[in-house]
Image (cartoon, rainbow, N blue to C red; front, side, top):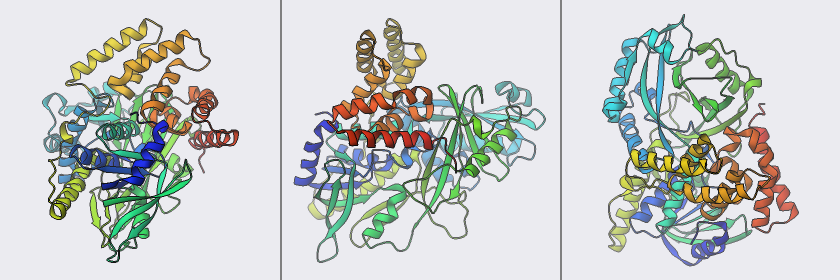
Length: 549
């Protein structure tokens, strides 16, 4: 059975009629990671998400699988050790969507990192993160650093360091987790929102009431254990559970802005400190360069974090000070995104000082909440939760489950044993595509979205190419694949969370909004009002990416 909205009724019926070992609330990186781990151990698992998979923080990060070099400043050595080593695990399991990225760390006059501090810090980073020899840090002279990135300010420059992180598409990583969990027996439903908890006389949760926002129906879901993996919404669920006491979240906002590559033509990714002591990334990717992130306390609408003029001004100032010849302005920004970090509140600490460690909170009702953490550490967070649930089920029922096996579980699209095998697949894909006129870069972009599933998309793209369609043949082929295999429902699902086009390919996206929305409307037999609603949503998102208040 396909992971498709065409099978939504079947998924809903399973949720209504079965009793699950584990129900996960929240379809971001943490929730989908938990669902996969539990499914692989043989648990009966369900997951519901009130929007689309990866709709929240998990599609609005810096899009890096990184170890958190800056956390060395705060002496969070265990955090750096754990998530640093996870980089290699995530890369091995999803080579198509996790890409090694050489990172330049400039050392400048009056910066927070001197030559010796930077060298020692990068060495410690390599040791803690277990970095392989070929990717260990290399310190550069002033001349070597200038050659590596000519846009740097020669007057301020002292030298630099080169080290490795891993670039990713966060939303694609989430959907690959969801697809893999589905293929191992998990039942996952997006656009399905938890509305209330049903408790027994002892105050323990026995089931939940959920609303399907597509069918407009409400129903009960029974589960032995319920995990609240709602990211920024964790405390709202705890409030519904009447257990919001003790530890609470402190949300902080992170904003990224996007420039055409010709406006910020970096030769490679850079990570540099700014006047307030924070660190900022500038990352070239597919014809654009994006910059981020900010880190400010957030107390407004959780569903609608936006980039403000002050956020943009902060990032522009940082970029223009580090690369003074480019003189960027707000008018040069072609897109943006803003996400929220669900951190644990600590009295007296600023947004940047708050720990990124994850925390598990168990209420008297049995609700298990998980908050904090980083994108890179999703698998370890999932392991903690599933270990806990497996132990509890074992005590109560005498059932046993296997150990966590996600360390060597390739995700959908990542069906490669080695980087060399992945490279061969890409080369074959490019040769096949070249025969019908698709360019090398276009095919490489396709591969880094869908990996070992790309050939079936290319075959469909050839069909559309030969049919001389008005829309882009590759985009139509991707849409067909996402309808059949990635549970999309709206144009926003497709353009934001499956392809990232709204951030990284806005010119083409503008012309495709209406035809893609129309195609989805036909696919789901929607009426004119529903088509207009879909168009309004994606056009609003498109406009919001360059509207700064």
